[in-house]
Every structure is written in C-alpha cells, then in structure tokens.
Amino acid sequence: MKKVIVGIMGPGNNATPADLKRAYQLGQYIAQAGWVLLTGGRKAGVMEAANQGAKAAGGLTIGILPTEDSMGISEAVDIAICTDLGNARNNINVLSSDVVIACGMGTGTASEIALALKAGKKVVLLSDHQESQLFFASLSPDNIFLTTNPEAAIEFVQKVLTKHF
Image 1 (cartoon, rainbow, N blue to C red):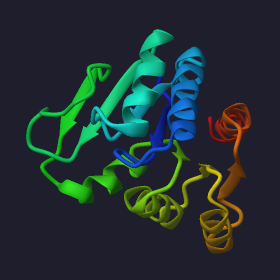
Image 2: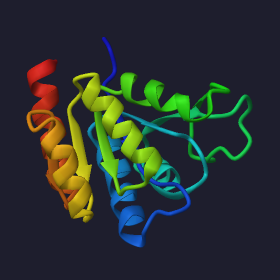
Image 3: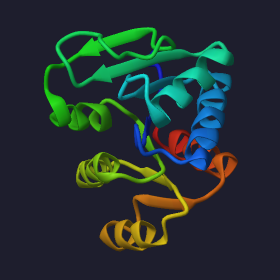
C-alpha cells in the first residue's frame, strides 16, 4: 500500500521564529498520523524544524536536496535524494507530495506553491503574510487553504486525503 507523503515547504535561512515553531509542530503531527514527511532536506529553517519534529515523534523523513551530495543535510532526514538540480528540485518536491503545506514565505516557497497549484495539488498556506495569502488564493481558490494554525492545516490534509485515498 502506498504511503502518504506530505510535503512541507518553507524558507531556509529567512524563516521566522513562528515559522520554525509551526514547522516543528507540523512535523510531529505528520509523524503521529503515520504519514511520511518530505522537505528540501537541508539543515536550515523550516526544513530542519519540520524534520526534527517528525523525528521526535518517530516519523519517516525524505529530503530532496538541491545538490549532488548530502552536504548540509539535516541529521533528521532518513532518506536523502540528491538531485544536482538546484532550485529545479522544487518541482520534484511538490510532484512527489500528496499534499503540500507551505509554512512561511520566501521566493523558493512561492515557486513551490505556484508549481503545486499548476499541478492541481492541494496546498495549505500556513502563513501570516496576508499579501501572499490573497495572491495565491486568487490563482486557485479551489486548491488552496489559508490558515495560521498548524492543527487546522493537519485537519485540512486529513480531509483531502480522505477524499483521495
């Protein structure tokens, strides 16, 4: 039986303290639900916090790295996939995820949200950034869910997965 993969995308070096707290909680919730966590795999920002949260709860983690090797990888990544694709790996991140949660906002995160919406994926935008919420909701109102609460994000993911699996 296929494992459910939930992708958490978010800023690396420019993550806010609120982004990091939410990402850690999301990682824990994903692991507790028995889902697999997919991130960009680096030891930075949202990726690191989500992976640490999932590992603390006994979860399985996948890191899709932008480089040809595992330099800079989070120690909490179980399965590292080295792509040597740089930012082009963002498409792999979203296409490999059953649902995408964007935790925080940055240029890389914005590209991942856009790619996910273009692919028809459901996206949770977990952010306080009102301009990005309005922008992405206007692009695909049926595929985006806006919240500032990790618990609400997970409830939405559960509803999406119930419909698709």
